[in-house]
Amino acid sequence: MRLLLLACLRAQTGNATTAGRIQDHLEAVGHICSLKDASGYENPSEIANLISAEKFEAALAIHLYKGGRLLQGSRIPFGIIFGGTDINEDIKHEEKHRVMGAVLEEARFAVAFTEKMKELAAAEWPDARSKIYIQTQGIMTTPSATFNWKRFLQNAEWHRREPHMHLIIIGPAVDPQFTSEVNEKVTRAPGVHLLQEIPQDDLHAAVKRCFAVVNSSISEGMSAAILEAMDLDVPVLARNIPGNAAIIQHKDTGLLFTNPQEFVQLSKSLMNDPSLERKIVTKAKAYVKKHHSWECEREAYQNLVLKLQ
Ligand SMILES: *[C@@H]1O[C@H](CO)[C@@H](O)[C@H](O)[C@H]1NC(C)=O
Image (tube, rainbow, N blue to C red; front, side, top):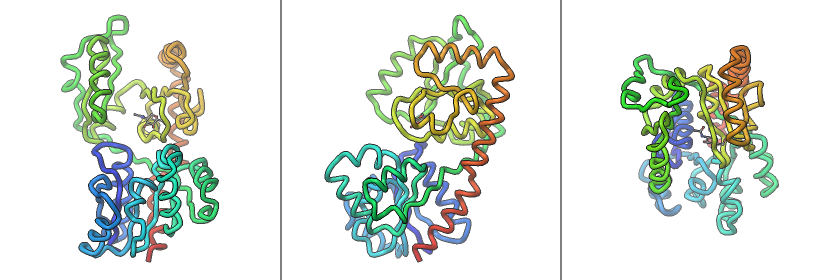
């Protein structure tokens, strides 16, 4: 099939990574799957033109609003993959809620990453319940062999008390104002470094050489970065918010903190207790292999697109 996959493709973000993975799953069984950036289109008629011009036979969209709204009234069959913020945030907005309901009605199937996401959507649109599938994100890490930390850290100012410890923040500067606030704080914090995004294989190699991965987010989502760290045998210290608590069991597959004091205390116990570290790493790896299998995700999408024929 010639498939269109619509998603927000801002480089090195979660949605873009998921889209790339799904594209790979589908092309592996002979489909042609074109990725298009949803933010480059205004309305469904622009997408209708694209569909005729490129002779797409079916479509997929990530995010019920951002991607899905562009497929409203589409003459080709399509499926939806919930993004997270659609069900958690956009749903509160009356007009977006209406559009999302209409899109879901037209969709042949929808995919939720978690049971909870499915339940939220099904509570809102009960008629759609039977077509919502649960498929967690598949994780496969591929650390590059040639990655060299020294390139990044040669100008680093050593942390005063723990000179061998650094906190490294890596990622694209999405919001310029927030980035400049972070930048300003980081400049005054020895041992903390802000680095721009790097290719995923290098990121995996970098993470693999870290003592721990920290997630201090206060906003919701499902963190592929945490799952990748687990797959790379690196312990995770994450803020105790529902998105993180859904994938981490405290002191079992990672450590959850609620405030800075707890973060410090848990970091110390991780540094001083190698048996705790070993246990966490082993259990986290088993969890990812069992619940975030890349092979299962591949098979699930290859089967789901058959519903679009
Ligand atoms: C941190 O966790 C939140 C919530 O699970 C998630 O939305 C975010 O993407 C995560 N970020 C990183 C870098 O792990």
